[in-house]
Image (cartoon, rainbow, N blue to C red; front, side, top):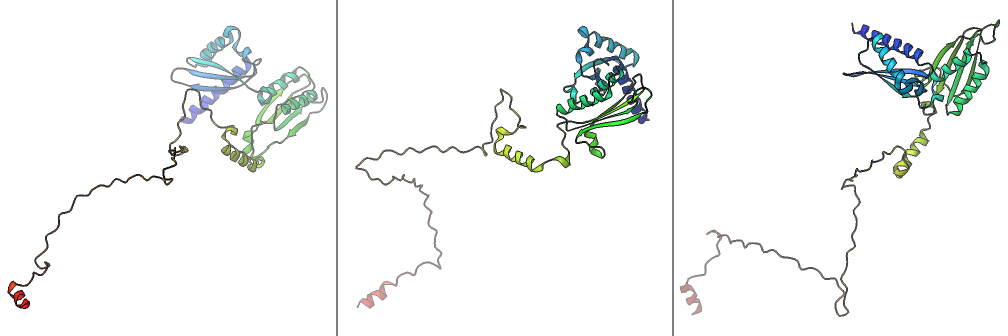
Length: 289
């Protein structure tokens, strides 16, 4: 069945993610994308520190390629490294950082407030960091605490726009669970959108296209030809000849050219409609006498 094929592909991807997570822990591995082509299988690794993932002269990538091909049976794999642009707003990277600090016996309170402040300074709209477990130290009871700043979505379909990550740290006192939610600066929720301001910006951009931020720039070497119908018509000034003192000031009109039409041949009149002929000569002579 085709469902089994999808399940097997998903299981293989999870195994690959666990493998890369273990091998590239120092590089800050956050995710994996698999792109299959007819020739090769591209594995795109998202990391926070590409230098640790590449290694000296690419030695780490070569070793990972051979291991993936032999262990997971992927023919002709090609590993690519993609750097995370803003690690201070990536929930997966920050959770792994908190986990490492907690396992080195740092105080969760100082870690939590410091991390939340850094995320807020990076421009996030809202942050929520939760700790649960052995927070009181050795001999203390487990408890939970939460640090929240800004705006946050907790339920509904709009939660898919919230960057969420969780992990478990294991210090000496006991296990501590970590949950982090971040709303990025470019996310706009429908209940927070100012439609009047958006429409005003669009109208302003239409009136003055140079102020529009989303206007595509034409690359060099390409000539833009406007439509002749939309192009403005330039009015050329008409030069009038100078008028002498003796000449009349009235404008001269050009002589119209007359075209002679061919003369139509007269039609022959019918016998019935012909004009009456004059009377005979005998009658006219008697009248004269």
